[in-house]
Image 1 (cartoon, rainbow, N blue to C red):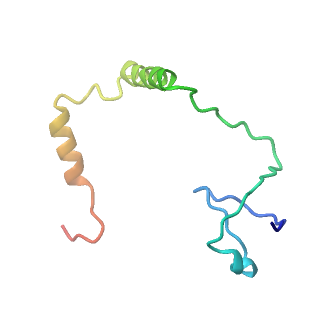
Image 2 (image 1 turned 60 degrees about the vertical axis):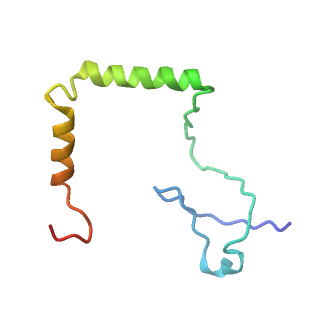
Length: 93
């Protein structure tokens, strides 16, 4: 096992880029230990399926209470309309 220390930034997509001088390591398996400079609160994932379902119910209830989709009378027609308006990459329609 070989240890390498370097400082880098984790991108907003979660990518960690190794500098070009580490190209020999590209594609290799590695074990990483992250030392974060600032305190970051990491959200804990729900422990089990029941908790995840409860969280989803709460989120959906909040959306319903806010009336987010109250203006939509026909959900199917609304979806078709939204899909038709979205531009498709590589298509000239």
